[in-house]
Structure formats: C-alpha cells, structure tokens
Image (cartoon, rainbow, N blue to C red; front, side):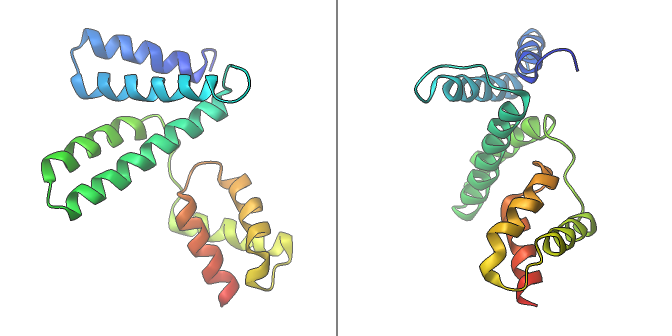
Length: 152
C-alpha cells in the first residue's frame, strides 16, 4: 500500500461526494475529523501512523455499534439504522474479524506463553493476545475468552 490509510480515506471521501453517497460522505467526514482531532491532541500535533489511524476507525466503529444497540433498545429503529449504515461503511476499512476458533487458539497460545494459571495474570495474557489479534476482534470478546480460559 503506497498511500497512507488517511489518504485512502480522503480519496474515498472525494469519490463518495462525486457519487452523492450521503451516508458514506457523512461517515468518512466524521472519521477524518476524529483522525484530525487525534493528530492535534496532546502536547504537539503529529501525523498518525496507519496503525494509529486504524485504531481511530475501530473506535468510531465501536461507537456506532454501541449507539445502534442503544437506539434499538430505546425503540428508535430509524436512528439505529443510520448508525448501522455508518458502521457498514467503517467496517469496509477494518481488517477481517477473526472467527471463534481462531480467537480461541490465539487465547490458548497467549495463556501458554505467559504460563498463566489464575485470573491475576489476565492482564499479561490480554497484552500478548492483543498483540497477535491486532484489531481483528473486539476487546470485550477477547477478555471474555481469556476469563473463561483462566477460570476453567
């Protein structure tokens, strides 16, 4: 990939504007704003790496998923559908999510690598597992798998 991830998002925004894809335009503008905000946060502004940019996109996707659930619970399907449409746009930029079996195998390897025997070592196992998972699974799901493995 010669272009940066951010440049890809910007060129996709331009293409979506030309195609008059309103949801895609709004979503890409929102995520680019979040990336810019992250770049200027802290003591000095900086250019985000592709990995950091991916983390921002993942965080925005998680927000959309949580919002859609909240709207469904509040019986506001029209708002939930909007959030889900934005989530679909964001997911097209995320790496493919790991399957249940792959996730279990990674957690098992992490437990063995750390030599974990109790819940007290959950943080160490999570750190090793997250290094291998690298955004291909939700952190809450990983934590639940680690807890189940260490408790059992």
